[in-house]
Length: 253
Picture 1 (cartoon, rainbow, N blue to C red):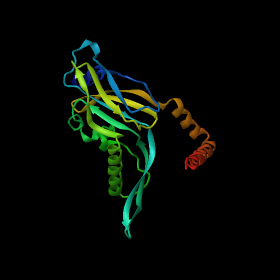
Picture 2 (cartoon, rainbow, N blue to C red):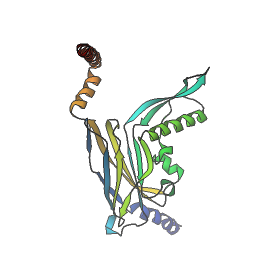
Picture 3 (tube, helix red, strand yellow):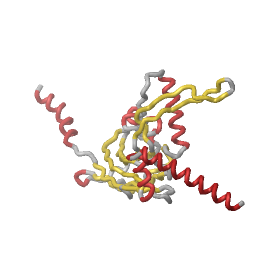
């Protein structure tokens, strides 16, 4: 009886002691500064897969990389035509919507993991956890979620499938993700997943900071910290330019 029990437990113990591969990721820029001439950037995400014990690289392993952040609450409004006029008719609020989301993978994500695993790790636009704030009908929420994702995708802030991860010799990987010119500032994360046989074997995260620089940073900081003074200064400058333009045109007549 003891021997039979030992034979049953032994494979479990051996499996528990087997070390899994490890990811060593990095990015080409840990900090991206937005100046007046900023027209976008291309971020290179690369790294290596370390196999324990010097074992041979796994040629069947795949890589998926997700670049996202920062999360923000968003209200989505739906327009309806009432008495011949288009007005805001219905709305839905979401607590945590990433301002930017991009997925790159070595193969289409639906071929790498099942729907449950994709939902757990938020792999793909249909699996982003948006956290609805209201207790509306699930069908209504699904409609608003689809509309929100479509708006973000058309604006260039959401995307998946356009970027591909290249794996070299089963060890090195790299992917390029484009950052749009109007990308929001804040803290971003580059999440890398090692996938094999539909399972995530390893994961690693690298932070990325996107911030304004120069005059743009000063203006953004002033608007955030001294909102009243910033508003009064903006009005005063507008009045001054308006008066100067009127005076100039009056002299040219």
